[in-house]
Length: 153
Image (cartoon, rainbow, N blue to C red; front, side):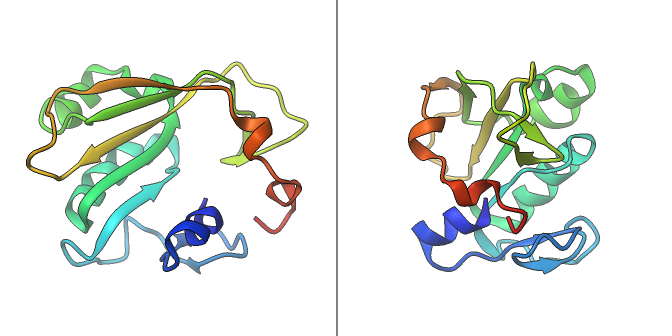
C-alpha cells in the first residue's frame, strides 16, 4: 500500500511489524507517536488489532484515518460500544469485487469469500457526521500491475 501512496503523495512514512522491503520494521502499537504527528494514517491492520489501530490512529493523525478491513469488522457489539458509538467513520467504501488477499497481501492465485472495505474517519469538523456507504466499482484489472504480485511488496 505504501508504494502506490508514495507515487501519489511523495512523502509516505511506512512501517510494519515484519520486514516486507518497504519502510521501517516496528510495532505501531508499541512505538510512541506524538498526537497529530502525521496528516493521515492509512493502514491494513491485523484484523484482531484493528480496533486498537483505529483508536491509536485517531490520536496520531491530524486529518484522518483510513483502514482496509474485512467487511465483518463493522459487526460486533464490543466494537460498536468501544469505537463506532463514539467515533463513527464518515465513509464505508465496500469493494464490489472480492479482493483475494493472503496474509494481508493481494495474491493472484488466491480465491476468497471474504469481503473488504475501506473505513474512513475524517477529523474535519465540518465533515458530515453520519456515515456514508459507497461502493467501489470493479477496478482491479485496470489498476493492478504485475509488480503488485512480486515477493518484494
